[in-house]
Amino acid sequence: MNGNLENDRILKCISCDFSNFNYYADNFTLKLPMYICQNCKLYVTGKSQKEIDKILQHYYDKDFWNEDLENLLESNFTDSYSIGRIKIWKSQTKYCNDILNNSKTILEIGSGHGEAIYNFDKIGYNVTGIEPDKKNVTSINKKLKNSECIVEKAETFSFEKKFDIIWLNHVFEHLTQPIQFLRKISNFLNDSGFIFIEVPSVEKKNDYRQFKTVPHAYNYSKSSLINISKKANYKIIKCDYFRSPKLIEGGINKIFNLFLKKDFFEFYPKILCNKENGENIRLILHKNNVL
Image 1 (tube, rainbow, N blue to C red):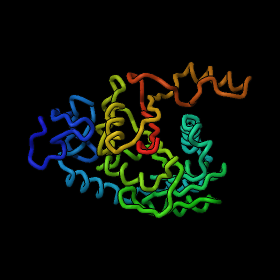
Image 2: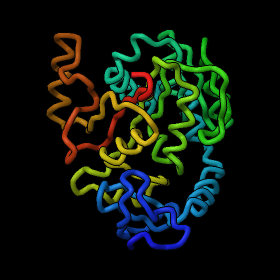
Image 3: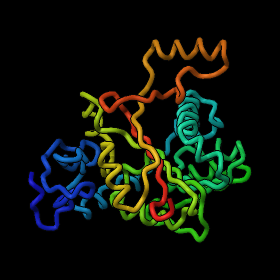
């Protein structure tokens, strides 16, 4: 496919402005075709903005609440799933250590089950969380002391106040208008503030099948993520690939932690790596007109 359809969302790549897309596969979850930009390797789901918006809206309007999820939210994050998520949150905070040290307020877009907002609140940050699921929000707010989670969608929320950090953990890939979204949220960011984003990476060698089953509007390479951020007028502070630890690395870290009370790998339980092994990409942004 060359991106020549009239009113086609992929007439021109939103990342690199290249106009040569190839059909990649069908997305089994959204039942839409996926295309890949041959220049920056941005994966696009659906042909038009209207098409993907309609399908995603229908998908997220479904009720995903069940007994397992209810038990998860009522466990106070002591279950194995939540413990794993909190470990990843700790890895992310280590990556963001420099910007967190001088920050007090955080806007988390997409609070999910609440592991991040709960733990940020627990260590003294004032956090405002946005989460579309009402039951999630009710459960999260019961656990918070100085923070608040509100029922709202990433695409439609608005605030009068500004924040030191805006936190997006595996949310950005679900947005159908990422450049417009980044421009919008700059209005809610203090001049000295930062944005943290983590998304799955499409560049891991021989690991493309996963993107056929996830409800993502876009799947990003490092270059496409950086290009989009620059188009939205942000300065790239740092951008890196991360992967899960190998069994031997987990053993080394456990022994090191046992004797020295600290991790051998700086961002454990995630490992800084190259693009061929990267499962996720982490990105820190700052307003370009400030720095």
